[in-house]
Length: 461
Image (cartoon, rainbow, N blue to C red; front, top):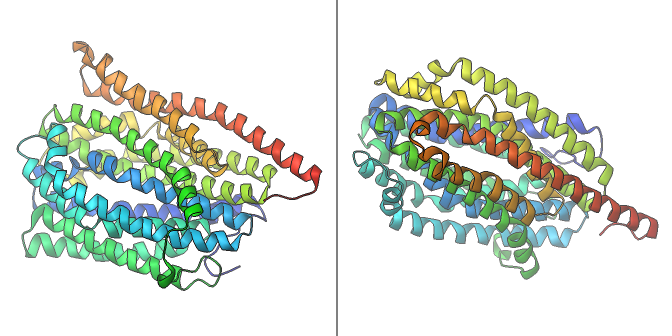
């Protein structure tokens, strides 16, 4: 077993899942510290209006970026299947196809983000008093999107190969750089939101360089050679086929958040400030939920490639129980300490903190439901089902929330933040139940195929 690499195909499952998932959780938390550091620094030194300006960009940024992040999921699934089936040629070609895709994706996002930032934010009814700052933050942030894509694609490849510790180390280094530069740019150079966006861009550049070097230093078939970068047709189609539905799902998921964000914006900048800070805190809980999704996806992917169907069933069960326990525990802790956590971000508006606590009451306490949805979705993708999870999420999450906002929320007595936020947990329940039924069907079909292959005595390809 190579350094930092976790076995997914053999040995006790629960200890392996814990050892694999914890670094992902820590890595995701460090990624969130990029944006958290932005909010904390501007909140401390620039005021709640700057917090609102940064927070107003999150939904539209996720909408645009997540489509391409989904392709990195496709790269990870393709790599996991290649490793599980011991196809070294496919491993090599997947790595060398994924990196050019990352660069092209980053360039496209930079052009779109910089040129259309103000237009997007205007469509979302961003308050006029924060629109200029929001536009500036978004444009500077998107200038470094190539670094963001290269890191995410490369990290997905490393995780698929069982290495979750290297991305953690790299994000630790980048996170420290980000915090230091935040303070320097805002306090010394008085750059306000542009300073924290620039700090994030630079730190992402550092993490991107480090993760590429890690791929270049591997000793197996997933080693990266810069001179061999090119598009391999089969791997390109596989990555797109597996990743595009995930990207569409994430983007459409974000559309519902954009619709809700637009509704939040109508309550004014004080409410927006509190909601933005609360949303950032929620992100830390979500990172833990999403880590189990990545674990379920990669463990299932490798074992699917190896045809180990009995092990996949155990992986799904352990991940679902684990994400439930972690979700309930973290949700309760965050809600209990929510006033103190929000005070880290907001120092000049007690009412904004009250609004933030209100949002957290509806979202973090039932967050384990989102975790169950994430694990079910990751397991389905690991089994090779890519379109069906997208359809379920589009209907169960996006469709339901948009329908809620356009119907229930429009009734005068229900036109309140509480009735807006309650749509989240309801959509999670609907989506998870549907995905669980789908997962049972897909798993049984996959297991039957494996048994038939075993009887034929030809092995799994």
